Structures are given as C-alpha cells and as structure tokens.
Length: 413
Image (tube, rainbow, N blue to C red; front, side, top):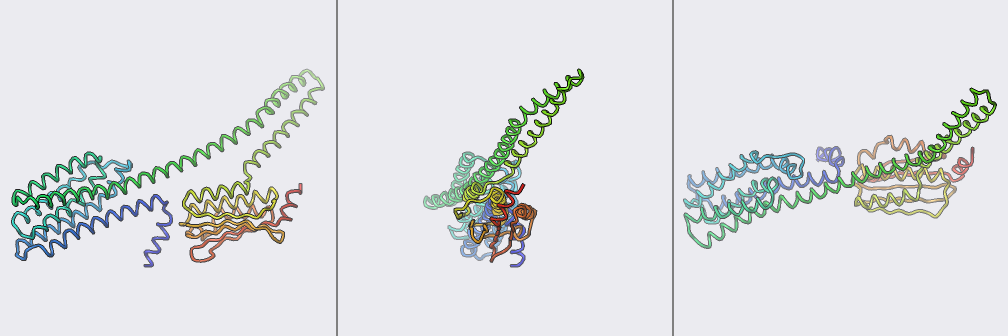
C-alpha cells in the first residue's frame, strides 16, 4: 500500500484530467478483456468438458489460447488507442498475431463442438470469449462500418460452420446470437470509451488554444497601447531633433529651445510608458475574484467567493489580486481539488485574504517561486503571506495587508 500511495503522489496527481481518464480507460479495457474472456472460458470448460484425455487436452489448449489473446490484447490496446486518437498509425498487419489466435480459438471450439467433447453450451460461450480480445483491438483500428460489415460476415461463417456438424435450428440461433453479441460488445466497449476520450482531448486542446489566444490578445493590446502612447511623441521628438540640428548648424539660438522641448517630450514619453506598464502589471482584486470563480467552476471545482464591502487602496488591491491569481493557478495545476473557498475579510485595520482548497498535491506542500514572488509584492505594502497544510490534503493560503500602511505607501512619493 505504501508503494501504491507513493506512485499516486508521484504520478497520478501530476497527470491532467484527460490523462487520468485515458489511463483509467486503458486499465478498464485490459481488465475487461481478462475478466470476460477467462470467465467465459474457465466456467464452461470446467463444468462442460468431458473428463477424457482428448477433451481435457483440447480444453486446456483452448484456455492457453485465451490467455495468449489477453496478453496480446493488453500489449496492443495502447497502440490501437493512439491510432484511433490520431497520434500514431497502427497497420493492420500488427493484428496478424491476434487474428491468428482468434482463428485458432474458433477452430478449437469447432473441434470440441463437432466431436462432442463438451456440453452443447460450452463451445458457444467459447465463441464469445475468443471474439472479445480481438474485437476490442479491431474496433479501434478500422471504421465502424467496416467492422460491422466484416463482423456480420464472420458471424454468418461461424453459424454455418457450427451448423454443419449439428444442424439444430435452435442451436444455430444461439450460436449466431452469441457470436453477434461478442462482436457487438467488443465494438461498444472499445468505441464508446475511445470516443469519450477523443471528445475530452478535443476540449483540452480547445482550452489550450483559448489560453494562447488570450495571451496573444493581451500582447496585442499592450503593443497597441505602447504604439498609441509613444508613436506620436516619438515622431515629434524626431522632427524637433532634426529642427534643432538644422538651427544649430546655422548658429541660431532657437536650437537650445528646441532641445529643451525634446527633453520635455522624452520625459513625458517615459512617464506615459511607466503608466502603461504599471497598468499592465497591476491586478484588480474584484476582476481576479470573478475570474477565479469562473475558471475554477469551469474546471469542475466548486468555488465559493465572499468579500466584505470595503474600498481598498490601489496598491493593496493589486497585491491581493496577484495573490488570487497565483492561488487559482496553483489549485488548477497541482493536486485534485473538488472545492475551493476564497474569502476577503476586513477588520482591525487589516485586510485578510484566505484561499483554501482540498486535494492538495505535493507541489503545493512546498514553497515555490510563485509564493516567493507573492511575498515580495506583499512586502511592498507591508503585507504578509502564510501558506501550508491545514488538514488532511487541505491547503490554506492567507495574505494580510494593513490598510493604514497600504494607504501610506500609496500617498508617499
């Protein structure tokens, strides 16, 4: 159990939700293959095979073929899934071994049925057992129409072949029904989960593209603001500098006045650029709280946000806004949170921001560079930051900003 918990901490919590669902699906497919195949083989063979040497040998060989089918299916299920998701291509020739084992299993079932080495129901259950491992793989590699068309042909062949030795109408109906059920079950088991995975990965890619577009849009906005602020003034500076050069060459005293004007414009450009950059880097607390609730809710995390009605200085709002932004990022990236509570409380001349979430991961337990950056921002307004575990898998981040100190910092030149 200790090793399992260590693996979970190291690997499972580091995976994204799409990766976790994919891993769960692969494990489910492999478990399903072993469970159904061995159940449909072991129980009928243990109870239905006759106790003579030839019957037991055929039953043992059939059981070995079924186990080999499960091993081959377990080895190829991941490449088949990658083929379905469009990551890599799995040629059909890679399924030759699985197809050969399927043919051998059907041949042994036909032999047992023809020579009456077992009860009539045993070889029919064996048909479903040997069809499942190959059907799971084949359903992921070929289109659905191709699978259904070839499965229908195979069901007809199996039914006709088994009917040659015992032309029983009811037996033929049962044989065809079991073969059709085995093929349909394999197709549904593989395609439904794989389709769900493809939709999930498509949503992941859409969110990634949306994030990149948001970053690109913000860069364009910042570039547009810089162009609007600096473009006109720099053009005027260039013209006045050229005028000052011409006046200086002619020995005109107005050259000094033009250079003084150039200096003033340059200082104005610096001031405006600092204002643009400051506005770009500052974070608004109200906007960040709304954004945190929206992002966490979209990620499936129940988020409760509460805030006291209080007017905060600009620098205090910016510092606390960055705390909310960084805390939200940590909740999304680390751990497996199901709920998150964000509170902003004011009292005793202090503003307290707390962010608490469950499902804390290992990365949240240690102090990273993000928390160090937040402490630096809060220190600029005489604030403090505390972060750590507050219970079993519960992480608590508390930031405090003194209102008086923040106000003094805001008005101090």
